[in-house]
Length: 351
Image 1: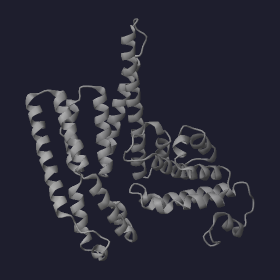
Image 2: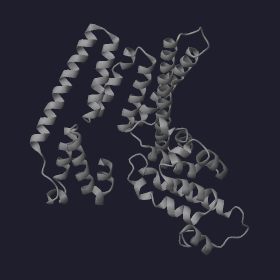
Image 3: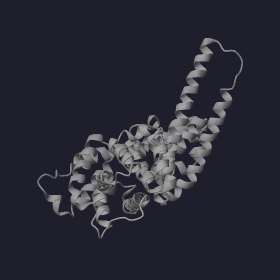
Image 4: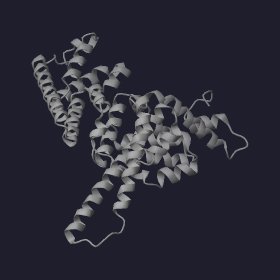
């Protein structure tokens, strides 16, 4: 909502009202609430009758509560560090990170990871969860230069967890019923953690690849995300993955690859969160370009309001258009520009 306020002036007031309502309902980010009203003071719509006045009492109460909670968590962290119990210190740091995240203090949350949280992680699942949270925070802050080194560390941690899990599941001695149930429950928990972390990592690498304009790699990563492994809520929803993956695929994949990797693969489950994209990809593979462009043009405005994709919309849509033109012309020795204009929904000059 904040990105839309900054990127699209006609929607600025509506985004402001929606965000203020959200902040009041969640009762978390007092600083953001105050900053919004400071911004609104300089706007022509800031004095409109339907813009509620700032609730100063609510803000001061919530802000004081958040500061008090911060002080208590910092005191607890210092206490646990002084006592030297690693697991207790890790939990204290984790609680502080969660508090900073909920109250919108993302930079402070990010700093906690840089203050040696890794050395307090005593189990593999703690290490994996820490790297995933660290990456999420870097993405929310658009700190892309920090994302790349964290990706390699996270991939290594997940790989080590998989190897350890495979060794633990190797045939061993006989187990009684209780032992078997405990081992099986642990195996399922670890398998879910590894699968969820890997899918989230694929999505984050996809975002990072978009930022670096490596759309082919972004496509390959998004196509490996599994719908069942995305928690809700998260920084991306399944329909975000469907849109990013589909548009990057249309810009970089051959028609035969698109059918195999998008429509006839596990990615289909994510695609079905946006049925229009299934139809668009099908139209592209069948060279039904009139309908195809109607469909992808219908989401272009929404993509321009996406904080991670907005600056890439023009480039990717041009890549898709050129690929479609090449595919259309491939079977012909001669083509008529007027006919092509009708097929692609363009003027003859645009063709």
